[in-house]
Length: 287
Length: 302
Image (cartoon, rainbow over all chains, first blue to last red; front, side, top):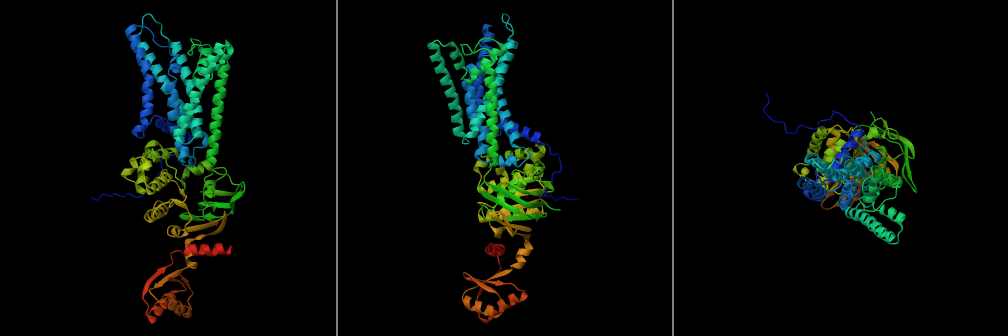
């Protein structure tokens, strides 16, 4: 019988499971996703993401209230991402640097690369986390609105299932496109503040140029040029892809170039940003 | 069993040869890798991790080839970088658990291991606070903990005592000694200070400008250069003359005399000389910087 307590049990070896790099990639994905929403970080890191999530949910709540009280639809699923476009843009600007900048600025990357994960898996995990975060931000309000519509069950209005699907599609394509642009810009400027500023600047620039060109071309009556000028804004670019595939009203209020043009631009942009992101990290890893 | 084998390992960057025909072999235990800044220590570690392909030559870590089995090496090896590498807004626990998972440990196992290693490196309540508020000593401990979290067979510690105060340095060195003996994890530790490595290493490799100067067991270093530091209050010159007369090899160094130990007779000679000259002997000490002296001699000889 021993009554003593052994406090220092000494070093214990680990002989349990050692999982592969796919598991490590997933762990990094979850860690990054949590970081984007400030989970497991100090309270001040949670303020911005959760404020923006709340703002995104407001129109959905208003829409449900309108459906309940007035028995009519207040907002289309497809117009939601474009009407609220400033919110995903700010979310991207404030949170994309959170996902990639500290690892570069504080040189955390070598801690990852000295483990089984490689540069490719690292970039994919970061990218996937940013895509999912943006998708959740834009899609959750749509889902909430759709659940509301199911529950309210308006007698005069048919269920807008196809439009809901089109809205989810827009959110997904936007998430994939914006995540790449945001991470690329943020990874080029490892200081978080500069990252935030550069992402927001690029968005504002697109918004302003697109608006100015649309106005100019419209006033001189050049319809085709006006149609293409809309697409400089990434939100309308993706909206144009949605219109081409699903039909429905044009969220910008104008018209888009017909055919697969916008879709090809989106694919090219995604390929470019991903490629540039890989090159950026290949270079960062070699240091 | 060999922990580390390199054969003619060479790394050339444009304009500079970081590592030149390095051929060394080390066994289990603590191995010191010594060299001035820029001698190629960090380059060697990156190559041994399989992150930097060699220009020529081969190397094996734990029997795994660095050119083809890098991923397997990184699974069973830990790495503590020389530079700062910790994100400030995460707690030590959160970071070490996460990096344990990155090494392939399931989440619950990683939590347990992280708690264990953080305790072993001497981080307690503060491990729940964001790393940004840590002192340099605490940060070095976190860096060490993340290298140990997956219970590696070998750890590469790149300048672990960098930036530490003398007490922190002593604690870090004691910890490294424990990792090598008690934990049973082989260690390759780099430093540009030779003196501190002799206290913890079984084997020392000295490189300079990417070339091997010397690789041998710690005993070989000290045997060859066992030196006594002798200090008296006054009459250093008289003592020097007396000892030289008695056939001892003596070199003055500042206020002290360095006496080469030929055998037990050396101690007697010093004692007798001090008594005869009626000197006040204030210091009689085994030379502290033995390896450095060897190093100095060898660098001078190259």
